[in-house]
Image (tube, rainbow, N blue to C red; front, side, top):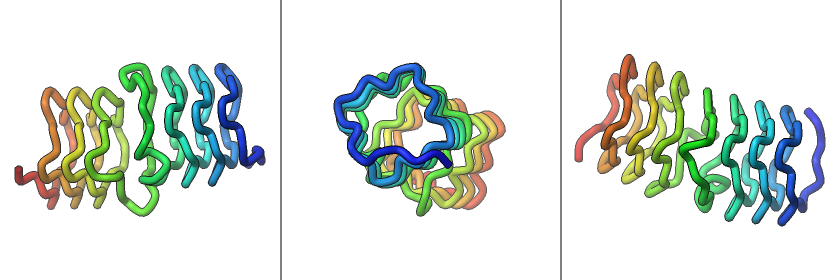
Length: 153
């Protein structure tokens, strides 16, 4: 895994190849990652608030709930193919609307009160997930495994 400095806040890293990069605990506040290759990058516990991830490649990138909690991005353009979530949690009340989580392993994930509207969860694994009060308006749940998931509203 490539090493990366801890403070990259406010930088324009659009279009860069940062795949397999260790970005754990990095300050990435206000950083432009538009069209950046972040496949298999480790972004756990990174500060991603006000970060632009539009059209970024996030296949198998690693995030934690605290790194995703303040991300404000036009999510309709973000390409996510298999996003493992550390500690099986996404911060409750997160806005994940419009993302592509097709084929993602979100088993036992806490998605309580999360906005999942217009999300693509085709072939996703949501076994045992907490979906209580989640907004699933126009979500694509085709072939999604919801075994033992809590979907009570």
